[in-house]
Structures are given as structure tokens and as C-alpha cells.
Length: 410
Ligand code: UDP
Image 1 (spheres, helix red, strand yellow):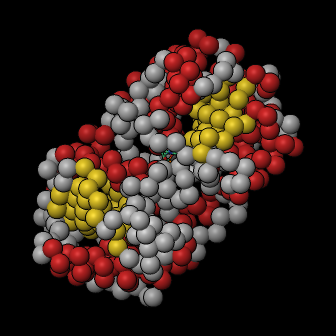
Image 2: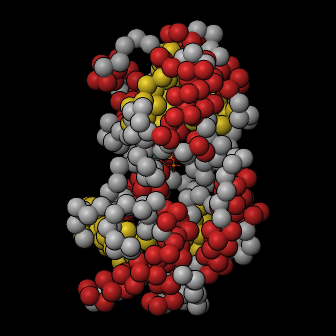
Image 3: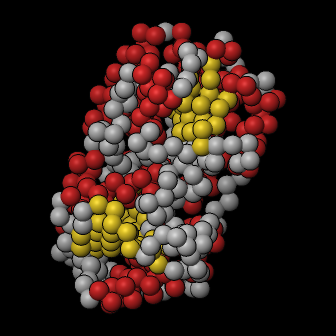
């Protein structure tokens, strides 16, 4: 089987945590590797995002990343890409003609890529599996201040209507999709995201701290893209409300890592106002290989997001044996088990987070037992099982005819 993966703005070679790269990039890279290891040919088509990257790069055995021009070779934010989708789609078609080898299945990621996927589905008469990772209508409901466009939401409707299957990562996302979008009946498949348990494994806390040059402070870890939806201000507020805030460090992993990262300006300002700026450190984006040291060095991983369709960070922390205190939203409600592997907080405000964090920071036995249970629970999400489920869906679909025609406006 040969699969064309469409990920216009999410190149799997980008470092997650910086700019717009995050869970989707990690998901595509890891799933592609797993499929490649099973002998599936995977070509990931992504927009050329820097002049120095080559057109074709081998990611793993049987897996290539193909960079295509869509308005030049410079970085464009995902909000700027829509007008260039037709050029991108033409690039995929030209590449396929040039090689003279077709694809059995299209797997698109995010709505922009879903639109390209619909065009390819029509031209190649090939089944199309779409995965949104986030949905516009769900984001708009999650947090005041989110303004995802009608164009995005209508495009998502069109993709759900015309693609052969839609993968969502959690039952909560399935419920939201069915409530907020039409035509989803019978098309949605829930397949959770996975965690690489070889990489994300418990390391000795003291050793992890030595490796990172950290001292004996209690560490509350935040890992993620600098995106307001991640709710970092809730953690900063919670840290200032702890019973003994002075012995605690909030470690923020992701973003550019220095004072000049404008995305973090409101966070710096809040930390100053709450008089805990000295206890908040910004490391910048950290590679997947280094992240287990951070998770293992932390007392608690905090995920105060307003929404997560799945929430890989919580799962990675759990796999490293670190308890998670997370918002009771989206997929986090499945991965984090309240009182067993961490705590789920139903309110987007600092006080209940502080209360649970205090409980874990004073009670080492509880913290350790939740961490051990978290590690055990994470094993259910090992990547080979996830890849098997995706492959099963692909095999089902390659025996059915592709859905009909589509156009999009440019
Ligand atoms: N990540 C990373 N380095 C960083 C920050 C984040 O590799 O500095 C990765 C993290 O390990 C996780 C992903 O980015 O795999 C974030 O996924 P999640 O589902 O938590 O959030 P999303 O980015 O999808 O909103």
C-alpha cells in the first residue's frame, strides 16, 4: 500500500513546540514511521517552509517528506496558506505524474490539507481519510477570544461530507464533531493518539534534574506551543496561590524561550504582577529526545488548556511516571483519570489547580502512587496498537470506491 499524507502547514521535520508545530507534527512523524516499518510506502506532502530544506527528505525506511512550493519557500503562518492551496495541490499532482506511481489512499491532516485531499480524491479516485486535530467550531466554543473563520468551519463541513472517513482522537471529540457538524454519521472512527514508550519512560528524578542542571526546587512543568488555548496564565495564577510558592519553579517548555518571544509577553507581565516572575523559567522548544528528562524531573505536569482534542503532553508525562493536573476538557478526560493518574479540574481558574497542586506537593506518597498508575495507564497507548488501528481503517477503505466531486474557491 502507498499512502499520500497531506500536511500542508505541519511538516513532520519541524521541531514541535516552536511556532505552530506541535502534536500534529509529532503524530504525523510517528504514525508515518510506524507505517513505514510495516512496509507501507508513505509520502508526506508538506509546504516548503524554509529555503534550505531539500525537496525530498527521507524520514524513515519507506517514508519520505516531499516539500512543495505554495507561494515560495519561506515560512507562512497557517492563516496565510488558504489562497495557495490550489498551487500546492497542483504540486502534488505533478509530483505523482513525475514519479509515475500512484497512491492507494490519501490521509489529510487539518482543514487546509483536507481541502487539498478532496481535490486529490476527485482526481485520483482514491479513498480519503481526514483528521482535523482541531475543529474551528469547537475552538470557538472553548475560549472567549477565539475567532475561527466561517470559511474554516464551512470547509470542515465539506470535508466531513465528502471524505470517506474522519479520524478523531477521543470520544469527546467525536461527540463534539457530531453535535456541531452535519454528515458525520457513519464516517467517524475514534483512534487515540499514541506515545512512544521507548522514548517516554521514567528516568530517575535526581538524575534527570542533574542532567538539566536543576536544583532542589519543586517543579511544575508546562509543555506546549505558545498558544492562548493552552491556558498557561492559569498555571501562573495557581503557582502564585500555592501555600509555599517560594520553593516552587514553573518550567515552561516550548516557544522561543527568551524574553523576546512576544507570545509570552502577557505571561511575563502576569508573573511580575503576581510577584512570582523569579520562579518562572522559559526553556524554549525542547526535542522529543530531551523531553523525558523534563517530564521525569518534574513533580507534576500541568495541562491547564481550554481545550485539547487529545492532549499528547499529558500522555507523555504519564508515560514518564509523572502525575498530571489537567483541565477537564476534550481528550484529557479519557487519558487522565481523576484521583488515579492525576487530577482533572472542571474550572478554568487558578484556585482549584492550586488546591490540587498543594495536595501533591505536600503528599509525596500520593504523588508517587499517582505517577506509578499514570505510567501503567499510558502503556495502553503504545504506538504499534495505534498504527494497527489506522492501518485497519486504511485496508477497509481501499476496497470501497472514492466519494464524488469537489471544488474550492481561490
Ligand atoms: N513538544 C515538543 N517540544 C516542545 C514542546 C512540545 O516536542 O518544546 C511536543 C510535545 O512533546 C507533544 C506536542 O509537542 O508531542 C504537543 O502535543 P499536544 O497534543 O499536547 O498539543 P498540540 O500541539 O497538539 O495542541
